[in-house]
Amino acid sequence: MQQFVEQLGGRRKASEIAVPDGPDGNDKPRKVRAQQDKISRLAVATAKLSLGSATRTRQHDACLMHTIIVPSQHPVTLAMSNAGREYNAARLRNKGNKMSASPHLFAWSAAILAAMTLPSLTSTDKSVLEQHAAATSSPEQLAEHVFVSRCSPAYVQGTYKLSVSVSEPLKPVLQSLFRVLGSEGGDIKHGIPPRSSHERTVTKLLQELGEWAPSAPSTEA
Image (cartoon, rainbow, N blue to C red; front, side):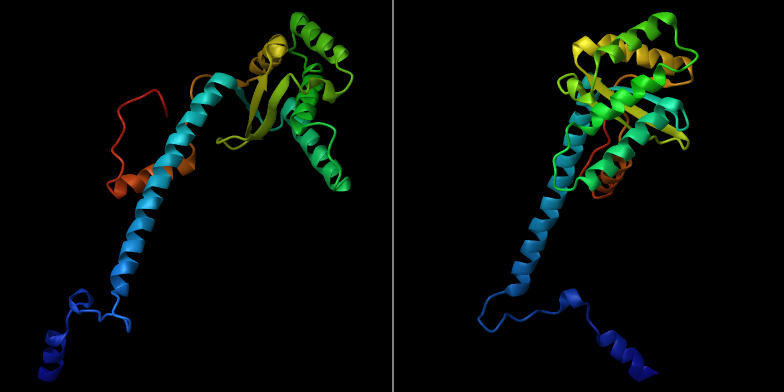
């Protein structure tokens, strides 16, 4: 037992043991540490840059995008989802050939056609949607007017997020679409979108490293 205690007492921490130079006389361990330090600083700088970019992207979305949360089984949601699946299937069938139009154009057209069948649609909004549909013979015509039209699962289970961005001439059509969706339980969003789960995770890790001070109270979630 005494011998075992002496052995323990004679041990030194790894940090206390001098690492000899390499055969060429260079201090390689020191170079490795310097390289690791650069990588660590690069990771922190990249994380901060990504958070800044994400914040600006959400601010731009608040200026350019129109968003509404609707039930996943709503006719408009189903129509847009089906349009996306059909587009992807067609793209696979025509592999190697460029598609005639963006998937956003087909999603928009599907949303308009589905909205025209909703019973809660007012006569005024129905007229707006019908005139738009009648003036559009193919989705390709909308290439200069529909910039974004997509639906994706929202944070709350059983709901989808519809995100749309259109040109000024189509704003009345978009307003009619959102009005009928709002009358059927849709939740129209305003302001800067909340941070994503990845943003929150990166912020938390930076704070734990002492590289990110808690921000002042703001209007962001």
